[in-house]
Length: 215
Ligand SMILES: Nc1ncnc2c1ncn2[C@@H]1O[C@H](COP(=O)(O)OP(=O)(O)O)[C@@H](O)[C@H]1O
Ligand SMILES: [Mg+2]
Image (cartoon, rainbow, N blue to C red):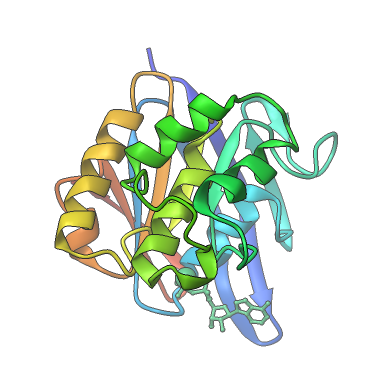
């Protein structure tokens, strides 16, 4: 049985004269990795922001796990998000960064944080300050903060940016393992290579329209 976790009905978005998304119906089921492909400026980030509650659609509704976004909840529960570059504090270590963020919900322990650092390959960064991290290391930390509380839904905007070849391989494995039966990942990328072979379903965005492409 399939189960829809995210449902967009008649969702559209315009900035002044630019129609970024025409009225669109789209649904996302659990257990699948979805790719959002499209050129720079095609509207991938805008779509992810509307799903995560950062941006309001001009028309239509977004429903997450049966709850209408913006009515009871401004931001959906149980969603891990990596959109834009996370603004980490420069004078904290990777561990301290995640520890600080984990204080908001208080659902994970120090050993969970160490586990997630290992998962993203940052277990040996010790006391090194995040301000001194390379772009790829910051990206890994961004992914760690998105997955550390084991959310059901994971939204990742260009998650392979800044990663070396090894990092890309590790990321693909991590995402495949993460997306077990009851989880859902949406991954936006302008690089077809990031998506090929990883995503179960790929949507292409072009000129405000979304095209379905079975992978
Ligand atoms: N806050 C905003 N105000 C005005 N225009 C925006 C805003 N955010 C995005 N846009 C425009 O919407 C279009 C889609 O942007 P975006 O979703 O970031 O593209 P992508 O992520 O596919 O590269 C672009 O033309 C961008 O300039
Ligand atoms: Mg983008």
